[in-house]
Image (cartoon, rainbow, N blue to C red; front, side, top):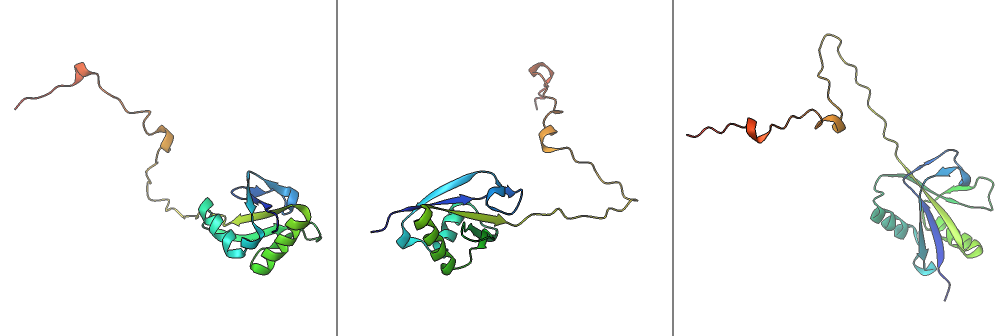
Length: 138
């Protein structure tokens, strides 16, 4: 029986440079049985983490000059398993879609309301004292 290997999952943050050492952020480590390691198992584990909108997946291959290799199928999963057996660890990077704000052209002739930030909404609310409350009886 083969030993378990560790997969370090880098997700929810960003890259300063697109290489193994350029990642900034938190990581999560999974211990895997090599017999159950496959592309779709990784996708289901990522779904459990809450990573639903994934742009792409990459893994770190220390033997290649490119370093970051796309993780698209079970062939890549077998390569990752080989790396893990040699080095006892493999790194997986989750790349998410970047949400870009939509630019809206506003008409200069219309006065648009200015919305308060969510933090300041309750600061200006005045709560009356009990003495100031008048109850009218019918």
